[in-house]
Image 1 (cartoon, rainbow, N blue to C red):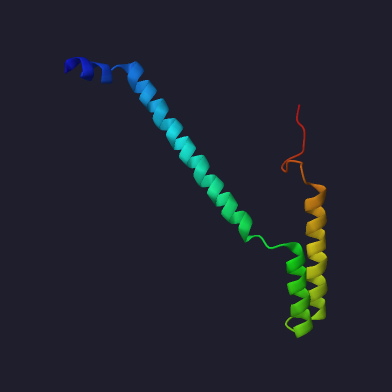
Image 2: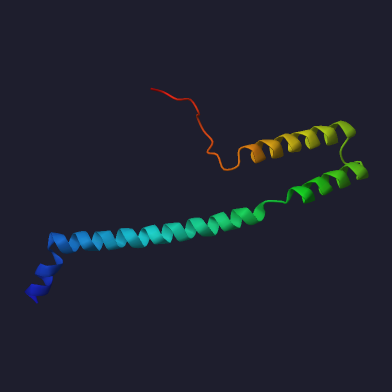
Length: 97
């Protein structure tokens, strides 16, 4: 029995066990993040649906002409910004030597 307990207390075994636990925790973390990202992606509304809802609200009189134009122009600005920066990282673009 002392051989087994001596084996469990060696630093090599403890390092391997710690590495195994770390790998399991990383896999669980990646899995949870992927579930959250999929869930968050489902919450996004399609732009055509958003515009259709906006036009419907305007037709019902829920929003004024000025509000309609403001929201519509802002949505066009946002869509232009996102389409022009697709594939490029965002952040500080300044270069320092």
